[in-house]
Length: 86
Length: 86
DNA sequence: GCGTCCAAGATCGTTTGGATCTCGCCCCTG
DNA sequence: CAGGGGCGAGATCCAAACGATCTTGGACGC
Figure 1 (cartoon, rainbow over the protein chains, first blue to last red):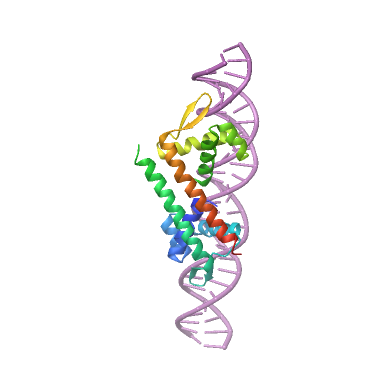
Figure 2: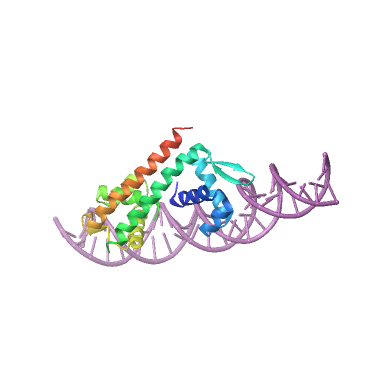
C-alpha cells in the first residue's frame, strides 16, 4: 500500500469515475485503474462496484474510505507541523 | 513522502542507529540513509542529530515521530479492517 | 592509525506512468 | 428489434522514475 494509492482511491471514491479522478490527479486514467486494482489485490477485497456509468463504493470500500482519509489527513498534519516550524 | 520512509524513520528513531535499523528492516544501510535524507529534504527540517555513535532525534524529529507512528498505526488499522472482513 | 559510523556515487532491477487498443454495456436510431 | 455509436474500465507495451545494493569516501573517537 502506498500513499499515492490512497490518494487515487479517495479521488475515485469522490468522483465515482476513474476518468474524472485521473484528470483531477493529473495522471492518465489507466494509471489510476491499475493502482486501484493493486490496492484491491493487496487488501483482498473489492472496494468498488463497477457500473457502466463509473465506479461506486462497495460497503468495504466505504469503510476503507474513512481509514484512508484519516491517514491522508495525518500526513497533512505531519507535514504542516514540520513546515510550520522551520 | 512515502510509507516506507515513515517506517524507516521510526526504525532509526527507535534504534538510534542506521545500521541496526537497516538490519531490522531487512534492507541495506545506504537505502535507509538515503530515505531519511530525502524525508528531511522534503520536510526541510533536520530530524536527527548525527553523532559518531549513531543518530539521535532532534526536537523536530521527536515531534514528527508521533505523527509518523500515528499514521502507520492508521495504516495497520485500515488493513486489519479490510482483511478481517473478507 | 584502526574501528565504527553515516554519506555519496555508480549500476541495476522493479515499479510506475503514458499512449494505444480492446472489450462490454447502454442507448438510440433506422 | 437488430446494428452502430458513444462512453467507461481494463489489458498491453514501452519509456521513465524510483528504490535497492555494492562499493567507496569521510568524520570522529579510541
